[in-house]
Image (cartoon, rainbow, N blue to C red; front, side, top):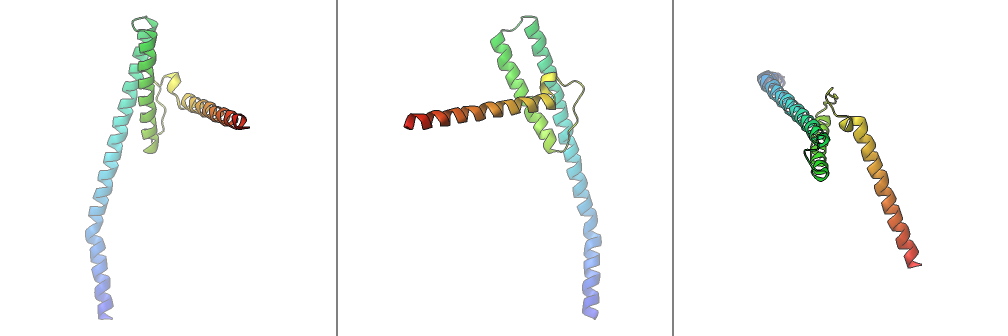
Length: 134
């Protein structure tokens, strides 16, 4: 009985001593998480601004169509990766300044269309391979 009581007191003491450290590390992780969300949100807004600027430059004919397409693709990929990172962190708000081509709905529709097109290409390639072997 005295041994059981001693073990119980030791366990309670251990929990009481370690609890503040566990809480503090959780708060630090939460602060890091919030900092990462803030950084990614700022990056997303910067990318949206750059997309708006390049669209204005293209409309004013200050850049070529080729440069416009290349730069726009890079910015869109960066924005999509940033949105994906925010989604992974559980941050799913859609900002008011989001360009129409980068709304979740537009991106999801574009991805679905690309997947369908890729699926059709694979099916066509499989069909030609099969027909050529006969």
